[in-house]
Image (cartoon, rainbow, N blue to C red; front, side):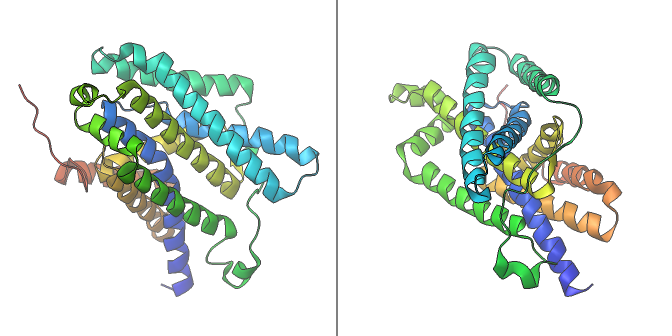
Length: 302
């Protein structure tokens, strides 16, 4: 195998893994706190991408520089998606806080289908071109066959988000409240933590990272449609399960393992089996290590 080809597959896998990680964080944070698999999370990723597309389209007509368009589209998309995440939690999940898990799960699936069809009706079922908002870096010109500017930008952005999220979780009052709530909600309430506020904050943060991932990958690929959130969401969920759902480091590790598996599988075997590699790997992990790579097994009390 040639070195250029190997590095291309390696960096392609890291790029895929970065996007999955931005999305998987939302799944694993929400599950870690309220044990809910938020199936509508992939649609937040899609809504973030569409919001950025609309904002970029309007600003392009004004003749604004590409970098400024990217910055404004990024901020608007992330804030808008955060609003969606907050609203979904209040409308679809909070009223079912004491209901059986199956009811909440059905509510999540229903919300996912509602958002998909809402965007389908508001936009179109066809793929829409997405502008290349990330500028080309001149210093990467000699390495263009190995890594593109958008790939480098995605890798750096994801690393920064991971560092900021780690600082938030470990060293801030909000992060400590999130960790306490995930361990024992009743005790957290007894010591004065506003659990409802913590849950809303978790949805807001997860929605923001999902929207960021949606914008970055859409700018990298160059097209979007209403269905991108479903596929990406399922794969990010697979990544979260691979790493051990409920574990933030596990979600990141699972995302990169999944991204590398897909990249090398499609590059060395065939791109026709891209999704097969992901789900075969998931089956193997569930058979031999059901708690995930970094997850901890828990015993159910009868």
